[in-house]
Each structure stands twice: as C-alpha cells, then as structure tokens.
Length: 305
Image 1: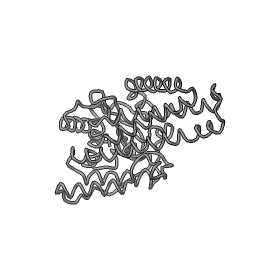
Image 2: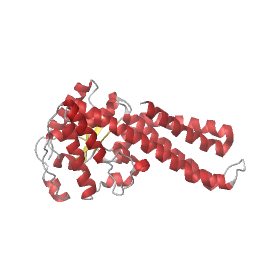
Image 3: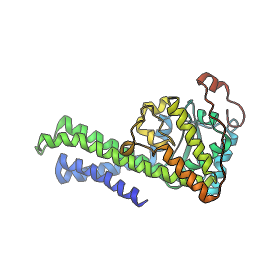
Image 4: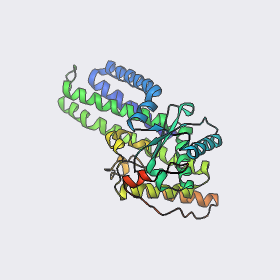
C-alpha cells in the first residue's frame, strides 16, 4: 500500500507540474483543484461509466444462479457486502471489478470465461476480483486512470494554445511528450502492483492458488494466443488495466509499459503460494475454445454455459 500511495503522489505531482508550467503557482493550484474535482466525480460515477462502456449487463438471477451464489459465498468469506454481478457477451475469457467501495462494488465476467473455465477456476477468478474489492483497488485504479487522462488533456491544451507566461517553446514540447509518458508509467506501475496483491488475496480467499494459475494460463492462451478480441475493451483501451488479463490485442509491451505483470511470473508466484499452503497439483480441464456462433449456442445450465 505504501508503494501505491507514493505512486499516486507522483501522479498528482506530474499533474501539478503541468499546471505550474501552464500558469505558475496559480496553475499548479488550479491543477490540484481539477484533480480533486475529477476524483470526486469518479468516486460517485466510475462504476456506472465502466460497466456501460464495457457492455456489462446484470446477471440473470435464474440463468446465472450458481455464479451469483458463488459471489455471495466469497463475499461472506471476505466479510464484505455481496457485489452486484454482471455479464459481458464476448468470446474472450476475462473479468474485472469496479466500484468506489465494497458496499457499492460490482464484478463482471465474460461469457467466454464461463465457457472455457471449470468451476474451481471460475471461483478462483471471482476470488481475485473480490480481493480487488476488499483492497479498494477498483477506486485506486479508476482515480489513476482519471488523472492520467486529465494530464493528457492538459498537455494537449498547452500544445494548442500555449501559456500566457511565455515559456520556452522547447519546454512546452517536452511537456507535451514527457508528462503523459510519465503519467502512463506511473499508472501502469500501480496496476501491476495491485494485480499481484489481488492474485495473492484471491488465492487465499478461494484456497485454490493453482486453480487461479490454471485460469490465468487459459485466459492468456485464448485472449492472446488465439487472438480472441474483446471489442468493447478495444473501444476503450484506458480500461484495460481493470481486467484480470490485458484484454487488448496490441498488448505486447512489457516492463514499465505493461498494464499487468507477465502471466508466467504471476503463475510462478501462485505456484509458490500453493507450496506454502501445502496444496497438491491441479489439473484443470484442457483449453477448449470455439468461435462466436458455437459459444453462443452452448449457453446452458446454471453458469449460462
């Protein structure tokens, strides 16, 4: 949490620096006020915006009863209110959580994920998302995305209209290039940090670290190995960090620019946890993916599969 706090402070500092270059001390104060206003708006509205942008619909209490019961059990185990459950119609297996706090949280899961994962793997994925809710990662990540977007907006404004203080144009050009770049690096660092924490929390909550490791491998293989796209995520790439695995087709950047840690590193950490917990091996079902038409025809049973 300390690392996350320091990174958030760095993000705010970048924002204020942009404001200072645009308008001196008054510009820095104005930037801070804008950041505060954006975060207040985000606090109250982010979950609705994210769910709508990703095409998530409320789960069917009858058709998705088993999934909703699972979410309720995990919430009871985590001692938090039960999040609302949403479904996204896409072949790409994936999931995310959103909401300003545990009392106003939601978890969303794709039909593709319900189709290719077994019950233990689905539970492990939902436990990972529940860990995000418990840790309030959903609010933290939405706030960082909002500030990063505002930094980009302000630098574009500076590039188009300049500053009333007559700064060196080279300094302005450097600002336009470097500030969004630095903000992106900080945002991605926060995202990677929170993903490792949610992996550990989800493994502890479900008691199934190897099932989560198996789920991550399958999601990675289908989303990126088979290049199965999530169209809604492609239309709003700023939301990519919220998913359990990066949903974007152009995801090859790694290191400082990656929204998520390498899947292989996450799997290795989960396997290490399993050894610590004394868990045996886990052999999940083999990956079986079929195109959209067949996927939609296969919705049956309590999972909607």
